Length: 481
Ligand SMILES: Cc1cc2nc3c(=O)[nH]c(=O)nc-3n(C[C@H](O)[C@H](O)[C@H](O)COP(=O)(O)OP(=O)(O)OC[C@H]3O[C@@H](n4cnc5c(N)ncnc54)[C@H](O)[C@@H]3O)c2cc1C
Ligand SMILES: *[C@@H]1O[C@H](CO)[C@@H](O)[C@H](O)[C@H]1NC(C)=O
Ligand SMILES: *[C@@H]1O[C@H](CO)[C@@H](O)[C@H](O)[C@H]1NC(C)=O
Ligand SMILES: *[C@@H]1O[C@H](CO)[C@@H](O)[C@H](O)[C@H]1NC(C)=O
Ligand SMILES: *[C@@H]1O[C@H](CO)[C@@H](O)[C@H](O)[C@H]1NC(C)=O
Ligand SMILES: *[C@@H]1O[C@H](CO)[C@@H](O)[C@H](O)[C@H]1NC(C)=O
Image 1: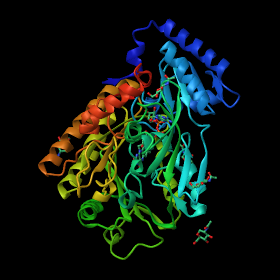
Image 2 (image 1 turned 45 degrees about the horizontal axis):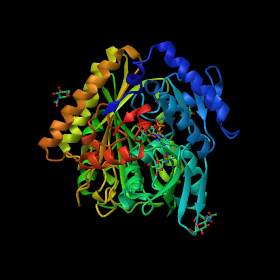
Image 3 (image 1 turned 90 degrees about the horizontal axis):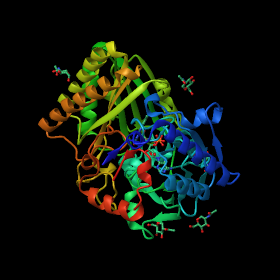
Image 4 (image 1 turned 180 degrees about the vertical axis):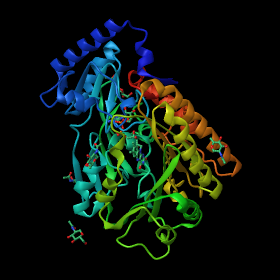
């Protein structure tokens, strides 16, 4: 059910594998239009194409391809499909799982799909699959328009949107998958199609969480929303004030019902010491009094909070500190953050950052992400992710994140991640707050499909069988139906 591209390759002798991928690269170069290019190791474009936010999510491919048209994507799929060459599709390259958007075979970077087109009369924004969210907000902010998109710098539109999408706007409008009206999709057999609710309800459902199982998306049509300036920013805390911050986080999770208010509470640990970096957000130039008072009353280390545009809060959080390091994510979904849960998450931060340091650990980060039930509206048409939407119940995607250097320590960190999620999951069960579905884009690579997609698994498997009978998308890594 879960497949590394590496596992596929191990059946071929190394030299034969590289040779057949080289042949495919040359075939691709000979058949694509001038809108597209193939690059080989040694070129700057190749290095940019295979680059990932986490070095553990990158691989050295035989070549990289930058397709510029859907027709060229179709040709590439036909070539790799016919010769059964492992390949990868990369949007923003921010996956936390090894092999999900990288390959030793043929690497596709979607960077040339870079359009952002606002259509005021249709109320839509068309967004290319090669962009990162920073680019999108830079275009939309001056138009006073936005979409239900990413919260952090560097994250790709494509992987984020095909996995689910927890946004600053989600409490008001649902997940990102609830706000995509159409997909331009190259099917695994090379047919180019537009997927909408009425034209192809099965694929429309499947693409809303199904990542790369159904083909390659070249552009998305998003619902547009008006956007004013927002209020918010980053506040950091450490030392003796932490218990007060924990209380503020649990209070926010228990009490706040204003859908324009949100926090992203990062519990970071290094060498056993916790430093908290919390983002406060309100979707208007000034928040109503009260909501953030508890946070603002606590003595802080640094504070950069005010009225700003959406692009500026997205760029504020330093997400690129990981560059060159190895990472792994996992998640424990919860319905809310009780005081005991927040305290236990702080304990995990100090415990694992101390315990893992001797193995080359740089830092750990546990991100508490309170959302309201309205972020997963149960009245919406069904979507692949989340597996279950329970009316009136929230689904908060707690992010667990380890950062280290030596590749030889990978197994230690992956094992520690399993231990840490088990610890917090047991407490979430005891507190009666375990959520239904693990978030696709945070779940560790060996997560069973049913933990993410729940009762949707059989339908997703049958759609997959119908659309990709030869399992061409199985040549690319990721969670596989
Ligand atoms: C710093 C950081 C902050 C984050 N913040 C958030 C957040 O606020 N909310 C949230 O919901 N998630 C968040 N995430 C998780 C994020 O959604 C995932 O990392 C996601 O994979 C990023 O998408 P990408 O395009 O950069 O990934 P990639 O690594 O490029 O791709 C991820 C997956 O999508 C597939 N894919 C990519 N492009 C296509 C395509 N065109 N067609 C078909 N399949 C494709 C890939 O093959 C791969 O399986 C964050 C991650 C990081 C690292
Ligand atoms: C914008 O949307 C309208 C309504 O759907 C459509 O008629 C028009 O062609 C679109 N404009 C462009 C430039 O695509
Ligand atoms: C966007 O909003 C600002 C502030 O209200 C206003 O000055 C500006 O003219 C608006 N821009 C557009 C394109 O509507
Ligand atoms: C991270 O991004 C900031 C802002 O773009 C930049 O100044 C800084 O050099 C980057 N750091 C790394 C490690 O790439
Ligand atoms: C802290 O976390 C570790 C690792 O999960 C666990 O063994 C320990 O019991 C926890 N301590 C407390 C006080 O909860
Ligand atoms: C490609 O797949 C689609 C979806 O299953 C199907 O409708 C179409 O007929 C196929 N095209 C070819 C040429 O096989």
